[in-house]
Amino acid sequence: VTTNEAFPTNFLWGGATAANQIEGGFGEGNKGVSIADVLPGGKMRQQLLREKGLQFAIDKEKYTYPNHEAIDFYHRYKEDIALFAEMGFKAFRLSIAWTRIFPNGTELEPNEEGLAFYDRVFDELHKYGIEPVVTISHYEMPLHLAKEYGGWRSRELVTLFERYAKVIFQRYKDKVKYWLTFNEINGALHFPLMSMGFVPESEETKYQELFQAFHHQFVASSLAVKACREIIPDAKIGCMILAAPVYPYDCNPENVMHALEEERLLNFFCADVQVRGEYPSFMKRVFDERGVKLDIRDGDLELIKKHTVDYIGLSYYMSVTQKKDKMDDELIPGSVFDGVKNPFLKASDWGWEIDPIGLRIILNRLYDRYRVPLFIVENGLGAHDKVEEDGSIHDDYRIDYLRRHIEAAREAIADGVELIGYLVWGCIDLVSASTGEFSKRYGLIYVDKHDDGSGTLERRKKKSFYWYQRVIVTNGEVL
Ligand code: BG6
Figure 1 (cartoon, helix red, strand yellow):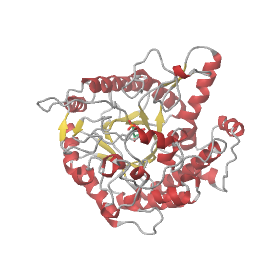
Figure 2: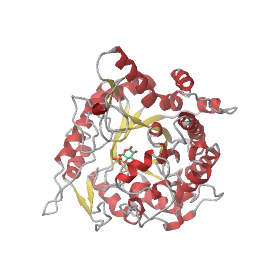
Figure 3: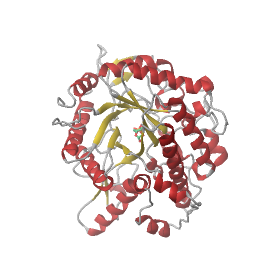
Figure 4: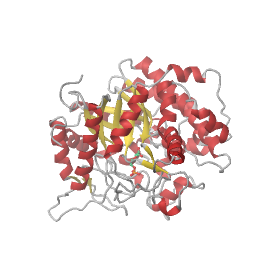
């Protein structure tokens, strides 16, 4: 219900996390080993995410494994949820670790200890009136499925995922009304290991492997939507895409065309399938040119057409600027998209270009195209924080970032976009997905944990904590 105010009265303000980045509790409660558990911390992770040769083994002599303890949400969830409640959260996004429910992914019966853990977490959230927003799969597939099945390349994962989804819908049907299927499903084009569980065999077979795996995920996602509607008729289930508007470097038509092609692949390919229920027409040419022949089984396309999502969940961190022929020195070091530097934007310490207007642009582009509600389920700034001698943390740079992005969201609403919520990514400091660092901090709550694994795990409120508290209490009137 919208009012005359800028943000709707029931707007879902809150924060977002993922199980593998906060829980820790490695091996506890019969948890199985996930893909995130074998990813080392530090620069090594970046390399492994792109290269073949992850050993699928844990070598503690050689590496550190930050996700094993993470920030210990597994034991400290009550304290953390109390802090979220103090900030006034209306919603909290978390994911369920597949490996807590099906340790290897192949069991016929779920693990009761894992199920009971999330019951406790959801009950705690409801105690404060906080709505859980749950991602079914966020970079934490069982390692066994990656090792023995080759990840989502295998059709068998569709059935295993459906079993897992049905179990959690059944168990939490009275507690969870907002669901998301695959986190940043489109991101797998750039870093498939975390979400799809494999690195392509070779450059020649890369696209065949990737698009076939996407197809399996689309079928699995549709089956999850179908099951969700049957089991929890009053729930909303969305897809989740990494949203980043793609700009042409200049008005040279070559660059404009190139940016359009990149934009379609990055922002629209997956959403077209999951929201419109069809492969977009432009994919025929992409498949032809890249030698992709999909194995589409009888009934797949009907399933995809019938069980489309209710809303689009999106993450937003940066825009991408594209140029057809680019020189090495124009590229952004550390960028995941191979874009060129945008002369109008400044970047974070990790090279992510900060662009609040880009958020308004992509919200408009998505809403113009799909006309379904949008939900910003991730946005935030990864930065180095300094703890002062008195223990305070003055993260004005983060406040500035969040303020400018929330203003952009408000403008998009004024443009006519139906936006149902805004969740700050990493509302509490957590393990970075791409680098495994603790020092890339997103939180409004500081956690005393460091890259070398040291730290007391003590929680502290940053300046941004109090700022966001006021944003929520005024429903975005005071930014
Ligand atoms: C998104 C992911 O890509 O961005 C999160 O959904 C991730 O899991 C976030 O943490 C920020 O990325 P990073 O690499 O800075 O942690």
